[in-house]
Length: 214
Ligand SMILES: N[C@@H](CCC(=O)N[C@@H](CS)C(=O)NCC(=O)O)C(=O)O
Image (cartoon, rainbow, N blue to C red; front, side):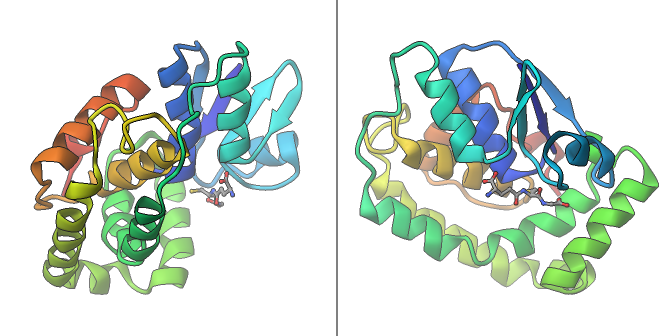
């Protein structure tokens, strides 16, 4: 199986994470961000992630998660989801992209290996969140808001091995959020959140961006 992704993309992180959790081997293919030809050849539109298996394609992150989880007939994402976690994700997502997008755009990520790919991303995303320079200038209040959100998340984390103690789709969504945030320098992770994101990164085999955070 091949999984086509952009490294920064939270939807792609969701798809990647189940392979690590299940110990299923796959080939990770990072597309250039301006490469429309590759995804269009597979699914008729420019999108990531895409799972390729024997000439068949699947282009929806949570469908990929469900497929890989069910592969051996022993699903592991069987725990109930918790409303407080879902609500937290909804409430906390508003400033995530304002923080992460300008930082992804200036990072040495494989999808930005060419100047054209980086420019494509910058242009497309600035059309959504405004000039990156303006968002970067707002870093202090945005990071303070993210820190306040994380302080509210901490007591919701019941175990470093599963937010609700039993693995569920909440873990897929929550780790994708925390992994996106890891590109931001100066974020303060309370104890349980720190243990959780580190453990999940290891189990899901998706490295955090702490080492390239800016
Ligand atoms: N519902 C889709 C959303 C996927 C999605 O929006 N992916 C973004 C990348 S993060 C994308 O492909 N955007 C088009 C582009 O980057 O040009 C899923 O969960 O897989």
